[in-house]
Figure 1 (cartoon, rainbow, N blue to C red):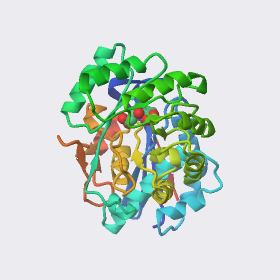
Figure 2 (figure 1 turned 90 degrees about the horizontal axis):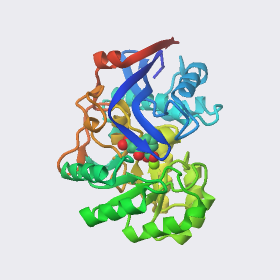
Figure 3 (figure 1 turned 45 degrees about the vertical axis):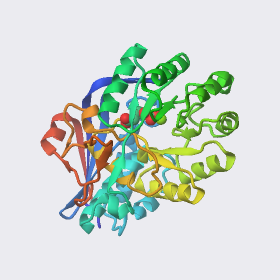
Figure 4 (figure 1 turned 120 degrees about the vertical axis):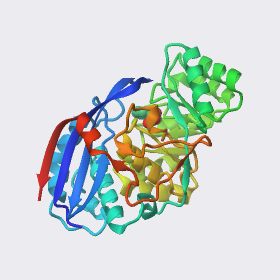
Length: 369
Ligand code: OSB
Ligand code: MG
């Protein structure tokens, strides 16, 4: 496939409710939507960076810059047989994984559509449906969080993840266990702790969490290894893992027992598969993380979660949890059993709806070979 044309749109969408983590509150999402074209075929990708560098160094604006000035020029007019080959064209660009992942995702969708197969299939996915959990933000009062948990359990979500930070942790877990008993429960700290909080972190062991996600610094692996030796609760790394090589380091040092894979954070579906295969070899379970994606990004997450190593429910909740109206048809829905049925149509298997995309578009650029 020769890439003839790339369209980059910037969208701005309002979320149904604010989402608060230890690093900030989000209620709007500004992100990039990319459409690549080869002849009469096209493919779609979505960026996951935030407006500010709170989760990672990248932002929507740095992604736009990398795409415009480096990644798209390197790709346009090139003949590639498979999306993996695009990564060779981009090898000169250090880091900027979220920018690379937008184009990678669009190329994989395009490739799958040209093959007439679903993205899940061309990736090597083995599941027809994927289990889903939900990530719940910090609330003003514990009672508000408990009500949200009750609603989501009723809807079928198969595990509850709660955002924590010092002071919004032990009492919250205690209240959840008291009201809901032995539900599958985990906590995500987004780097809100340090090793000086060891006693507090050890106290979390009493709540039988399936894991604690990224308790320490966003760039750290070695202190997580020290902490893991002190905890019974498995540590899951999110922010610290940018590649299969990082995963290898973390596994060798004992910095985690579980890995949250986010396609954007590792630079796309090609590197996601490398990381996945490494985790399979080491027997380390993966699950698919989320970045509050709109439909295109969500569809990529559903596809990757069909790979065999994704052994735990992902943060791939239904479109309606985030959006008044998603930009794809059908929307992503979660059944009462807490599973998403993976679409079987070509490519993403969900159709981007142009007039809705248009309504949220605030800027648009087209690049031609
Ligand atoms: O740390 O997993 C995270 C959202 C934005 C940034 C980071 C994270 C999250 C979530 C929400 O936990 C996952 C989702 O529902 O998309
Ligand atoms: Mg996380």
